[in-house]
Image (cartoon, rainbow, N blue to C red):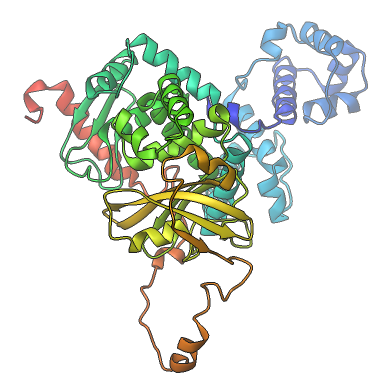
Amino acid sequence: MRAAELAPAENDDALDLIALGRRVRHLRKKQGMTLDDLAEKVGTAPSQLSLLENGKREPKLSQLQQLSRALGVGMEHLMGAEPPSKRAGLEIELEKTQRGPLYAALGLPTVRISNRLPMDVLESLVALQRELKRRLEEQAATPEEARRANTELREEMKSRNNYYPEIEAQAAELLKRVGYTSGPLGHHIAARIAEQLGFSIRFVPNLPNSTRSVTDQLNKIIYLTQGRSRDWDSRSVLLQALGHHVLGHTEPRDYSEFLRQRVYTNYFAAALLMPQQPAVEFLATAKRAKELAIEDLRDAFAVSYESAAHRFTNLATEHLGITCHFQKVHESGIIHKAYENDGVSFPADHSGAIEGQTICREWTSRQVFDVKDKFRSFNQYTDTPSGTFWCTARTEGHSSGVYSLSIGVPFEHAKWFRGKDTQSRSVSRCPDDPTCCRLPPAGLAEVWDGHAWPASRANTHLLAAMPEGAFPGVDTTEVYRFLQQHSQQEADPRRREP
């Protein structure tokens, strides 16, 4: 499944008309015919034929057949995808660009394209348009644009209950091909999946710092590292890399597509590490016993708690009839990731973005940081303006700090979970009432208002534009040099690293 299958398709009909018109003009001039000559042969007015050649009129099938006979070419040649010449290709590209929304937004006059336009001027204009488009797309990748794209993706996930049957089917088929039966997906099975898809795996010590894996698509080699894997399961990183291949991803055109590809490949990896059928059977058995617990799913499939929590959101609504929400919150109280389809009210900015917002101090995802027992999960009921929710949470350390990972459900679903009998309860008035936790208590404010001057940590990334390139934050030069070095080593076995 390609990314385009999960996103709205664009209408390219007008662009095809431009290509057709340029091809008709090229063939007419090649045979030394004027507009009047060809118009007479096909029985139409020269003005109508001119509109067709300029891509502004759609011909009927009968007229296409007449043009084909008059120009002495087959219909397949007349409708072919390849431009008839280099110049025609440049003319088509320039015309498409000038009719596109990016160019129109600039309010610039259009250039009349004719055979009098010198070739070097045409080449310069096309090169200028390409660079203009590249820069406009880079400018779009601002933090504001990134938040908007993330919000749209979260809404898509919510509308589908975070369940993608297309990806589930592809993962199930692949597991069947490698002979998986049940239990945790061992490294040897992950390697067998790579082999089944024609890829080999290399562990290297010098993976580019901006990457978790690098795929050599020419030689079908996936490079991983064993040196910086504290936060990553190497199985998951490998399966995500393979996911791009299985799902037919191409280089992302913008940040929105980059995010979608990442979500889909993460889902693909989870569907392999915790296959749908055994995972659903495991969860359904636990539900019948009223003993659902994220840590049990984690232990049954030998994955991280975060991976198990994410996977629970994929399957809970579709297969168990349970709506839920997920949070990953930094120890500072900032939301790192979030998802919901149960009506819980996350804090959000004017664009609807949740990530980067501060979660209420009374929520389970904040309260868990103060719990002394870090071995077991912390459970709590929280009364909110949106209703009462039961949540289970625990903390995990990462290189960037400590995070809480929590799964919550509406009160009526709590009965299916272990920990439903918890006595911990809190009341949150956020986001409606700022005195809940956004404003300091009146007593403290009376003493310290105007007498405190904290030195805040400057989060400079909040001021920066998104990194350039199709893969934000990745140093392309570093990646290409890495691949060049290792492809040479692959070609010469004597140069391979031990």
